[in-house]
Length: 264
Image (cartoon, rainbow, N blue to C red; front, side, top):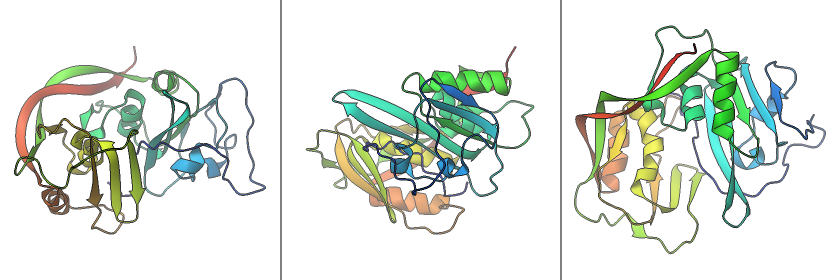
């Protein structure tokens, strides 16, 4: 997996931060796009904060023409207290990555179909509600694939503590949870250790299950001590966890898996 992916939930403010003179789209009703030329490529090159400034009501699913690494993230903004609006973006995503986004699960939970479409895809969802449901419908309509949840015996990794109450997890006094990606670090604010799992599952290529027993909300950070587009080795990730007072134990369990199949 290329370490260009950022699957991050971020609370940020909106605001169009694209360069002056960039082509933009103004829409009122929900618009669906399947062709390259309609939506500017620059829309797929923004970061999570800039993404909040793009036009709303866009639902884009198209074959990709990007050749660089996969890039995807989900962001959320809070226009009113207690109200969160999610947005989703993926560039050069495989069918498995597309389905993981559409059904809101980790890539390691996806069971691919026997026959897959050729190539990868771009997707973008800036509609104000039912984001995953709308993307699922677009995948079924445009690509002819759907998915269902099914319990299966699966090789997993259990996330456990090395010693009780690891000191790296500080009880949080913050009122809002957030994840802040930075240079060589991910900082988690008012989160549980299970919040790390979305960052771990893809790299271990196995589902990671939380068995830490840490149920409070904490502030903590992950040191990103690796370089290059191929991401960390398993040993590097294990070292990162050990520094937090955590470990991984291989196991086999029956867990829900997302089984992708051709739509009838």
